[in-house]
Image (tube, rainbow, N blue to C red; front, top):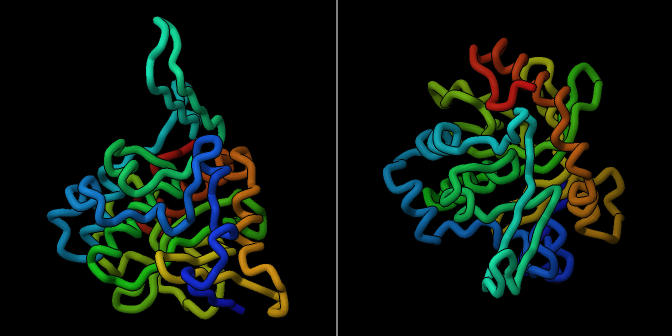
Length: 254
């Protein structure tokens, strides 16, 4: 069952995502959705409908790939130069960095979490109900990897894959789902949500409702390694299934 918490009532320490930013950079999960940042408002300024916002992200946001075509999430930051080759402040995140929506809008590049968080900001501006979903994807009971996507209530609740290589043609191309469960299917792909969240609410799927840790599932997702998320079999399966269902695939074809 889904267990729901109000973000403002949770201990902020439980919502820290420091491991997904640069070293010692304190940030809370809801702060990733900074919809009133100028970059975000500019990005979505011509979007009048939820489909406009969803498709703007799909069209404009490129997936970060290295020169071999493999997904990468390496982030490097330098500031205050003090030598010809060095700086006073230098930080790096070699594996899994979660960008704020304003950062993704500015960079026009991001992985599944980044594009989902930017989509969330667009839906937030339009005052459309939504959740960012963190979870796992499977094909025919085979675990493919960890993944992020959007669920939103537009003519019923729907599952939005933000890494497609072409925009949805109509809102009805976005698969309808039952928000009361945590597993949804697109073709043979099973999306299994561990956590749903937005700026106000955190929902976790709990088999044991007496679990005393409200963010255990969030922390479990955060512990997933880069290799467990950026798997070739995940992208290959997503690309193949979306081509079969919609006629077009995802940005990463593996």
